[in-house]
Length: 470
Image (tube, rainbow, N blue to C red; front, side, top):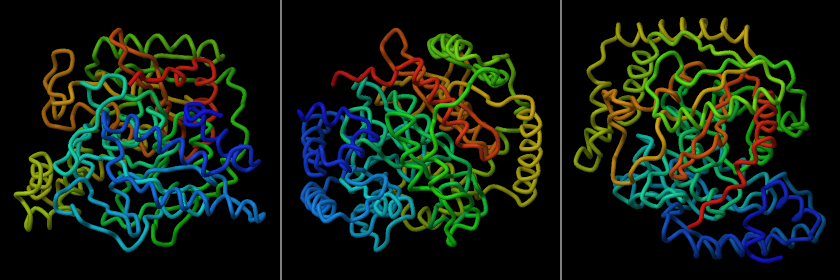
C-alpha cells in the first residue's frame, strides 16, 4: 500500500488494519510522518514534532501486537495534541511566550486517555494564545494556514488540529471548545469537531471547574472516527467534579439508525444573527439533504435573548480568574485581546456575575422546553467563511459591525450556553472553494443520537471526501 493510500484512510479503517496486521503501526506512522514533511512547512499546523519518539512507539506497538497483547480502540493511530493540553515530558506552550519552554510533568486527561487506548503521540498542534479567538496565530509559532486556501485562516482555537486532519497529517486529534473552538476550525477545514456535553469528556486542571463553558473533545475526518475516539475519552474522573456518564461502550454501538420522522428545527441565523450570503447559501442547500433522509424540517430557533450578556460576562469572569496572574506578571507578553478580556473581567461587579448566572439558568430552561418539541437543532457553525490570514478577527458581517473580537462567533457561543451536544460537519463550499460547516445540536446529554444523525447526513453528502489541493 502506498504512503498516500495510508494517510488518506479513515481512523476506523486504519485501526482495523493494524489489529488484523495487514498494516503495521510502523508503516502507518512512517506514512504520516512523510505527509507531515511534505505539507506542514506550508501549513504550520504541527508545531512540535517528535518523529523519533513516535517511530519507537510504533515499533513497540507492533511488537506488543505480535505477542498477542490486548489492544485499545485507537491502537497504533498517530495523534497530535492541542498545545493547550498538558503533555508529560513534551513542551506545552499554550501559544504564549510566557510558556515558550514549559514542559509539564503530567498528561491532561484527554491525552492520557488517548494514549491508554493505544494512540501514539506524534506532536502538538498550533493554537491561539491561551485559546483566545477563533483565528490560530501566536507569537511563539506564527499562524496556521487553511489547507483549502493558504491565504485564509483555519479558524480556531483548535486550528492546528483541524488543518492537520484535513491535510492528512494525522487521522485523529484532540481539541477544546468554549466559544466554538472545536466547531469553527472543523467547519473551516471540512472536518468533524464534536463539542460534547460538559462533563462527558473530563477536563483537568481547570480553575473554573464549576463553570462548565469549556470542554475538551474529539476531532477527525468522519463521524465514525469521532465515535471511535469517544470510546476512549468518555467516563468520569474524580478530579473533574462535573464529569459523568457511561463508559466507552456507549459509542461502540452502530451509527446506522432510522432518520424518518425526526423533527429538526432549522435556523440559518438563530433568530436574527447577521450571516454572510455565501454561508447562508451553502447552509440552505443542505436542507434538502435532511428532508431526503425523512426528517421533518421546520424553521424554528430557541429564544436566545440575553445570550450575549451571559457569555461575555461569564467569559470575562473566567479569563480574569484563570489568566489574571499572567496579566499582573507578564502584561508585555500577552496579546491585546487577552489583555482586554482579562480587564473586562476585572471590571465586573458581583451583581453583574450573579445576574449572568441567573439569566443563564433561564436560557437553559427556555432551550430545554424548545427541545421537547424538536429532536435536533441545525444551524451554521460560523457566520462567515474563512477570512484572510492576516486579519486577527472578523469586524463586520453583512454590513453589521462587531463589538469585540469574539462577537462574530455568536452562532457557536449561543450553542455553548445551552450545554447541549453539538457536532460540526461539512456543509459544502463557497463559490471560491472555501469550506462551510453546519452544526447538529441534540438533546440534553444525547451524544449518540447526534452522532447517528450526523453519520446519516455525512453518508448522504460525502462532502468529507473533498480534499484540499495543497
